[in-house]
Length: 84
Image 1 (cartoon, rainbow, N blue to C red):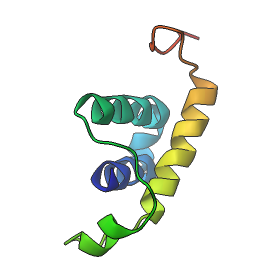
Image 2 (cartoon, rainbow, N blue to C red; image 1 turned 60 degrees about the vertical axis):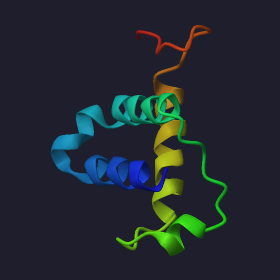
Image 3 (cartoon, helix red, strand yellow; image 1 turned 180 degrees about the vertical axis):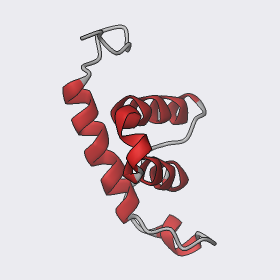
């Protein structure tokens, strides 16, 4: 989850990444779940073990973007993003 959060934050901060920011975070989190990666427990173990020094603050940024994206692009009962 740490790497996914860092990549979501990186792409979301770029000016050319803004138009796809929220659909991208939904798609990346869905793919992460399909691949079997679980949610972070915020214990900080991944941060300490990360060879690149990625902090867990990126996970909170990804969660904020995900909450905003789900508010803007709600998901229906089948797990698909509703068309607006």
